[in-house]
Image 1: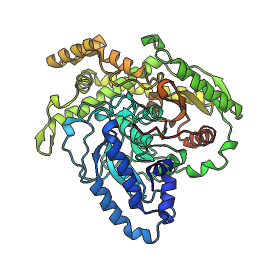
Image 2: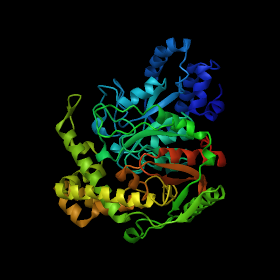
Image 3: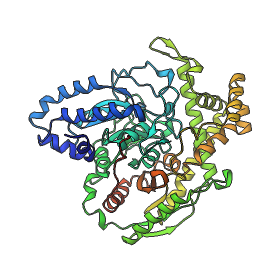
Image 4: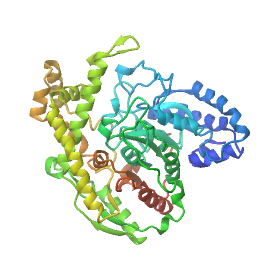
Amino acid sequence: MKIEEYRSFDATALGQLVRTRQIPAQELLSCALEIAYKYNPQVNAIITFLEEEARQLMNKLEHRYQAPEKEVPFFGVPFLLKDLLGEWKGTKLTQASRAFGNYVSAETSELVQHYLNTGLIIFGKTNLPEFGIMGTTEPKFTGVTRNPWNLSHSTGGSSGGSAAAVALGMVPMAAGGDGGGSLRIPASCCGLFGLKPTRGRTSNGPTLGELWDGATVQHVVSRTVRDSATALDLSLNVATTAPYKLPRPEKSYTSLKEGAEKQKFKIGLYLDHPLREVVKATVRPEVKNAIHNFAKRLEGEGHKIEEISFPVDGAELARSYITMVAGQVAAQVEHELKTKKNGAKVHASDFELTTRALHLVGKAISASDFVQEKHKWHLYARALDKMFEQYDLIITPTLATLPTRIGELEPKAGEKIGLSIALLLGAGKPLVKLGLIEQIAYQSLSVVPYTQLANLTGIPAMSLPVGLGPERLPIGAHVMAPIGREDRLFQLAFQWESMFQWTSAPLPS
């Protein structure tokens, strides 16, 4: 199989070729590795190659080739794990942090085991910002991941490495997680489909129950809608010990493609900026036009579109989100500082400046303040419930801008000095009182102010490619649905996919 042919197939099609013995799985892996080894030095999507482990997986699958299971659509398809939560026994899990540079997983997570059970061939792990914190994949330890559409720009975060690999055609889909937009933002930046399932839809076990207070959900980023739907169908078995459990959907998500065009929805459309009052931010005209045109085309297909206000106060939402992230980062850093990794002690200097600052802030936030902000999540959920009484879906941009330039979201020089002084003094409370961390967070969230609402309320949401802006930079539309209603998202996504054909990024020269 030639490289361009391999890149033209999605995971479902590749699995079909292997099951029907039109092509051996070894050939697919060879194609994936050829692309990865040739182009990864330019984009830095993969930070750990696991070729030997992939070959071993191939050998274990040999006995299944005698009668490949028809119900396993991804049989022999190359796949990548995000290097955060992608626990695979005996493999490195760095979380893009120097503190975890030599950490090796002692067990395999339930979701990774689901992927292995489907016959996917894992041959590497992808890049992310340290601990998945930032909205751009530019970690100091594992290096910058560059957008295949334009190497001067970001892939977004935190599943930026996975999105870059899929956009480049190394794999047709890759694993990720979403705690504030971390699947949807990279999908938008790289012209892909990214869906965040409902809270509890996929497993975080066995060692973890909820992630980031329930804000984080794991799934995949993909080039086609059917791959995402099928992957979710195959990931629904959640352990009985999980804190959230959802009933299985009556129909498989994959089956929703049939007759999807008949579904007509009443949709709320929001095109303004939720943080315009606190950071004077606006939505870039090219983005607003692309989302407006997307809505118009849906209207032409029989959907009813009405402009709405943002369901909650954007600044309050940002503060709630920032408080949660700071608290979670503080807890993680404190744990790591007290725990030896492979016999070696972790030091504060092993973490990035922003992570260390969030650690100080998280320690300075009182338990009372944390709980009060967490209570607001339920108020946001109620506000959304009321809106979903009127509308089946809500559309916003995924990003308020085009994908940012590399380095654009770095703290400014003065901010770095302020953070460094605070770290030197160990002074977290002044950072909170002066609002420096809040200022940096607003600067970052002003680019992506829409996605966090779905994480804090637990609802499902997705990003769909809707066009290319200047410099061939992708633009995504963000769509939210009521809790448990991934079916609506997939039905709309299948419709849009038939109307708007998106492709892989061009290979770098």
